[in-house]
Length: 629
Image 1 (tube, rainbow, N blue to C red):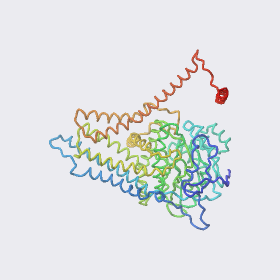
Image 2: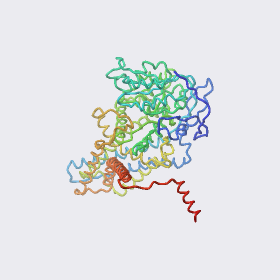
Image 3: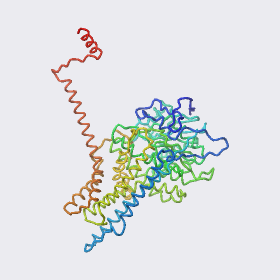
Image 4: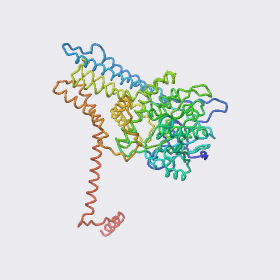
């Protein structure tokens, strides 16, 4: 057990007040830490003085909207974006726009009704998404950090599953963990699922404590809290064995490197006795490929906006790059939940319980401070696998636990925010399915759900889409990633969100059919998983649906401009990942070929090039020439 008191000096200016706390990451493991983490590690502001003894501390918050310089413009946009989507929905479903065809077979009338309902549901989903976005923008807030209580006993945990997690990623995480500062007893633990000898040697070399449940029958069960071969079972076994020795546990996944101020910035919120856990944003460190850079932008809305909005209700989602949790709250909830429901269900269960000491509901905090930097998907295969895994967890939470939310969360605000958060994946999947169904019904079967002017429809649709994009752009100053280029509009993240919809559909179908995922979640950012054509099979299937609808519309004469534009955009979305992959492969081949040609020219026989003289020699020769003249 070690004690690492914070040393004086080295203050880093805060973006809010000019003061701050130390955020120097020290000698990090690689390029993941070569960015302005000092500033982004103090986005919530400087550490404030703790309350006076005897004064009950409650976490205070600052509205992000109140700190902006264009509040009036943002307020108008918050009102205009939902109203534009609502106007499109109301105009579309008016009875005078319903199609009434006479002398058509019954199946044609059924397709007309189905098309009308499909179009209405699509616009309703779009309206809910815009309302969710506007609501998060309006209520988002950051906590006011305070100095932690000295002397608290903390365990810093990192799970390790041999064969799934690489030892190099674990080494980087542990090297960062042993540099974390804490004014009190701190133990760094490696939770080794397989009792790997190399992992034991690494722990001995770094002074890290090693735990394994291998060979203990009561900690290795086929199902339940100690399910064998799972991360939650590994964590719960440690909690059962050593949890009572600590007041708090901090945790990051392998490959995520905690910064030295990880605990300094998180533990202070636990001065509030009703805070169960504190979570931070997930920031990706590897930006070596275009997919990795776009994947970072894809997470913007959740970590920079949705989680901040949850602070309004004290119910942040239990996800992110790292967290600190009160051991008593976690033990009361029975430990972590199984991976099918995962962290979302764990957070929901904790929020549904009360603190026995105070009788008040447990609350949570999301801090915008970047306190851990980790790996992420660098290929399309890794990105789609990550989205499949996360959407599967969301569907599992909805099916198994969200029906309990009205009784667990109780407060309307908490319930409303939880519903908007977990509805993201099913709404995206349903919108994509309804879009494909509408194209098939109209372009392929000739259905006519509504009799509207295509130009008017396109105009209203473009206005609603423009307001939604403007709302996304207005939130870019709330960025929490040090990797975002200055002046970036975040368009790559929007594109990646659209490209993920077919994957959400696949995950939804598996959840409905109660099928297990095709393969376990792969390590994020694993370079050993290159892209193959099979990674795009879901997108190619949907491309065939939209392409077939467009081709069928030509001989059948189903030439509605709006529906054709819709199908064309959807076809482009489904083919975009495949085209981007092939272009990147072609570019690499061209670069390798050009390098080989240049290398061959330099080493060709009979080709003797005079050695170049150094610049200083050329300058001296020029001077002698001028002197002679």
